[in-house]
Amino acid sequence: MTGLTAAYQLQCAGVEDVMVVERLSTTGGLMRTNRSDGLTIDHLPHLFFTEDRGALRLFSEFVGGYTEHTSRLGIRWDDGFVDFPFQNNIHQLPLSQRREVLTSLLARSSPTGSARNLEEHARALLGDGILELFFRPYNEKLWLTPLAEMDFRWLKAKIALPDARELAVSILGGERERSLDVAPHTRFRYPRRGGIQALTDGLAERLGEHRIRSASRVRAIDTGRRQIETDRGRIGYHRLLSTLPINDTLAFAGLDGGVGAVKRLRANTVVCVQIVAKRVELPDYHWIYVPDPSLPYYRLTRVDRFNPQAAPGLSVLLAECALPASARVEKAAIAARVQRALVTEGVVRATDIERHFVFAYSPAYVVPHLGHEEDVDTLAATLAEVGIVTAGRFGEWRFFNMDHSIASATRAVEKVLRA
Image (cartoon, rainbow, N blue to C red):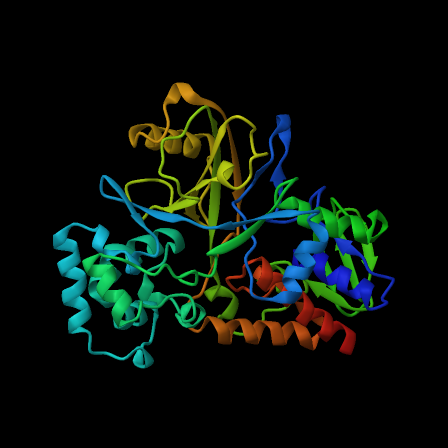
């Protein structure tokens, strides 16, 4: 997403000799769509939400039409479900858990400003009840990292307690004036046709085939000669923008990037199992968070709720599983575990499953370790010294949504044009 957007913006700025070097045979990166056998199912669940008007203009220009939705989200809880956000719906919990949340909120003493890591920040903000009931089990299941070893600055603007009145309603129940701003993805957009890849396809088409060198895996970067070595030959460059993982860019360029900084980078692998079934038994949620450590997936997404083209006439469920980046991905075994869990949970009957597909991505989510921002800045500065601008989710090694990736492309283009 970032590379295609940057190439398009450079083209708009009058730079004609732009080339995108793509490892795979098709562009799109994480934003690719399974279009086999009449399906339109994204490899990983993607929705577009943003307050950035520039990002929205780009999305609107290239997807060829979209639908708008107001999200309804849930959390798998005990033998049922709780509405998301968790902290806004405490009244849906059993009495003992409501008492635990209220007691810990009343006992809070440490201000969030003194927090040194994500665990301390969440405890000061949410209290031990919410931390231990939901926040820790879900996030440690996703990130595969103890909260005490994670930075919290990336999350500061993403979670908050409701105000005093809303908190009373959250715990006691009663009438609520529904807020449409409890989560950044409350309102989202999705392409009418082609899945999320419609966006990157639109960008690639505007660039033209002659500006995209596909199926070209980078082997090395010679910053002295200003050449990229790929498995399809050498490519010369005047200015280089890399959206590769920042550690890979450093390795290809023969740079260490500072003592320990590269070694401290962490990420997980995400395996997404696509289930196409006659029927799925779930509440009317768009997606569901699953903190239970005994279940293999951390999130379930009902794709057919916002993408009727996914598998016309059938239900489509995406089950996402997190693995360590170093883990061996055994797709068949993971798919079997996921299907067994879904059947045991009563989500789907085995006889109703018509097809399934498995896609794995690594890295998928970058983990904001302690000192993360300082380490990434050090590595980016090392690349800048040899004329390489790094950008995107993996180039900046940050937790980016699509609009963040677009903004990253814009910042990178400004640096390239100034070089």
